[in-house]
Length: 410
Image (cartoon, rainbow, N blue to C red; front, side):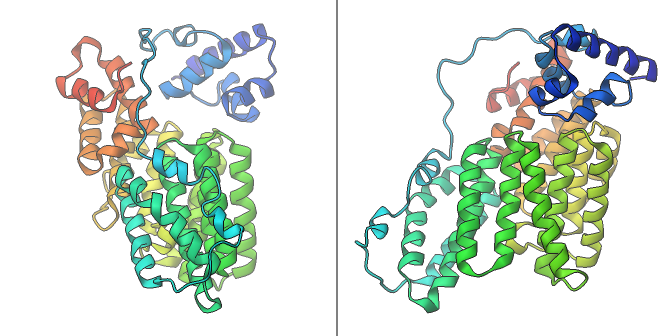
């Protein structure tokens, strides 16, 4: 968009908003953005380059995308599917749909020895499956595992209790992370809250803050950006006051992850300045840490900071920056999930530039690494739909086949 085009676009937004009788604050709340972002759009300062944001704005104004921007691709109306798609985490969702071990509350379970080492191996496997986006197997495993650890933690001897509560917290953290990736944010909220409580019982304070990071992710997916910012900011402020300059590597991992969470929150809110500030702080923490680590399964380190920088650039509509940073990264030492996420975000960046071939190539690379990520992630499926709209009748067969596998036809 040229400056003149941005001003004309902003004027149309303001006119449609006024015709609906909405204030900037009301419309911003309706579409999950801030009033300052909307003000910048209407003044022609903030461009709206992403098709999904354009659709969101059009829906909030009650107009078509083409009425806002005549050059936007036309999406043909489709019938909603009559059959609900299966969710690989359905069984895991049932686990958090009540008290895991009500018989313990009633005093019907006596204390007994727990095989802590075996449970530790099981929790390690839970995180392997989470990092690999193997949600169906994860769900099957968690069905019996969560009640087992809950029972062990509540009936353990004092010497084992702390470690078992810690294992329970990390299990719920994995569940929260998985629910976020499958767009089950309400369930992620419940799982993260249970992770916080179990972490407090364990006595490991950093596990509490790692759980709060998972909670902020759930709020982001729910589009409750004010709650996401509050949870991440209060946790981060407390950590930085407590540790000052003497933070150990584990604390730096959590601090850095919370800065990345805030960068995403501000990017989703359209606040470019604050998003950039948080990315700068995350990079500074990454330099202090000096290596890629996986404390609390956060995978925080210099490489992951740059992966997140790609994601933030995509959120802000800075496709060129995302491509420049992302194509230079070596992610071979990170999990499949992180590597696939980078490829997915590169696909989104190329799609913003309407480079259909490059976007398709990146998405297919991501699918090869982690099919579940591309087939279930909202952003991936939206990108596939956008590419089909951009390409129209010239859409390559590989793109149509990918849309079939991801159920992502426009």
